[in-house]
Image (cartoon, rainbow, N blue to C red; front, side, top):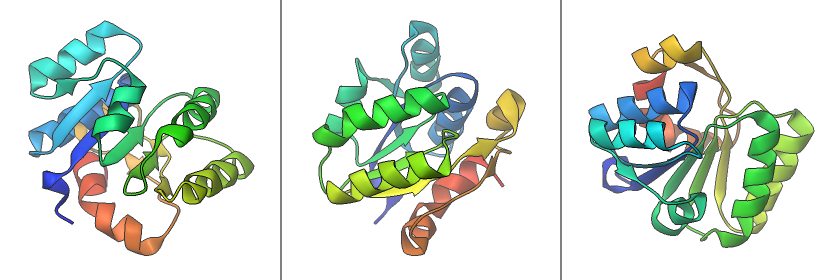
Length: 156
């Protein structure tokens, strides 16, 4: 799969998600972003990305969905999105969530025939902007290898 031919959605364009989105756009990926606040979405559009009206729109149109929201919000978001997924989709959760919750969420995505990677990040706003995040990837190795080009753009 050529990731540059995939529509990639990012839900959560805060301090970390905005840097991830900007770096992926600069690397030539097709990025569609959504955030509860309008300013970060406008900044993504100004950088060359596209805006989504809702997280549901991201799930409707994207092959790969990255979530970058606060831990408890990530759990609620996953529970909202799982029933709307399509079997071909890949979900990468950049949120920091406890192991039991991550395991439960990963199983729920698998039951919906989706692929899931737990990929919490560290490095702060500056690391996200510079593409120097530390990414801790958990999940299927073949899937992680396939998504590795995305991780190389956003971290090290």
